[in-house]
Image (cartoon, rainbow over all chains, first blue to last red; front, side):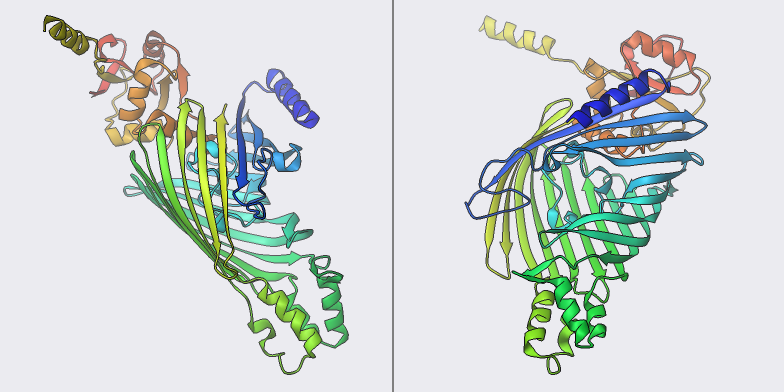
Length: 383
Length: 131
């Protein structure tokens, strides 16, 4: 919090003195939620009402430095991180011309339709974007982006190219590990005409996860398992499992119908990390909302379908001792997932700058038969 | 019965008669603007002219949001928050009175704005009337 106050003070001092033209905008979300059953956990919530998990505050500073150069910084504190404030983004932009802008610095990775304003709850109707698709992580990269808008006949077109890398922590099976995605190259293209818009995104990179500390079972780490396999001369198997400079790809499609009355959104994504124990992930969602003045009820369906890479161990069944084959198979198979999720909720614009939202989520794990439900409510503001 | 008739008359008269909105530009501006281009200008998809808005909460602002910019006020605000927080755009500047709007448009060759059609004067040119 102190950091947050300091940042605010610094921001106001900067705006008052150094630069003439600083725009300050802010947004905040205060969300509360709880699962309906005492043993269930979903999206960081348990059975006790929790206000911190998905709440956040942010201020964004944009300073026009003249000559088409501007600098943008977004300071964001998440309740989940005790409201420690961090630069979510910080980049320089140069307007090459009316249609083209080049940005460099810490940028949002343009995986999804809502990537750019994931944190700005006010910008969408849900409490949270569908997590089956959006729960990927790696939201920001350090790099360069070229953004070009234009018109193709009657269509509005926006094209973005991005180059960069990701180097930070990620959570894997409950353990914080170092993750790196190098040489990220990607492009997104969005075309819209009236209420209808379509989007495609394709990104590739080289992924490395330091998975050694991840626990497979009490006392058994992934590093330990790989070490043992190496001792048995199975380095080929280790390299087929380990996430080490592995070619990775992300493909996303989106289709939106956004008229005065209806808001229908759908996205499909496919994620692959070659030569690793990571499952191939297919996810999609469809959300249908209807606007009645300031009230927008919606219903959405999400699917998360991860196919375990059983090819990685298939050839070793007969050759590998059972006590080694079993953990290898368990590791690969554990990546399988098949979840169906339904959401119903509404957004109510009760104030020109604030919206109240409520959402009920029901997730059905098709592999285990587990079912869990979450009720969340929240207020989103922009200022 | 008379009371009822009176009530009916009162209601009819007091009903917020939607004002016609005049979309105005500088007198020297010869550009032809249709409703699609007006939508584009007020949603940041065209920068052919510099759009200015009346301040939020002013009577004809929300009417203009719907008729001129093509979206309800809340929807438009959500739309702009997407652009603002990605550094991709800034909403049109806001002006706090119709008199100031007329002055601004009369003084800036590339400005486009709007006022209640009843308040238009000779200092600006009307390119479209939204009914």
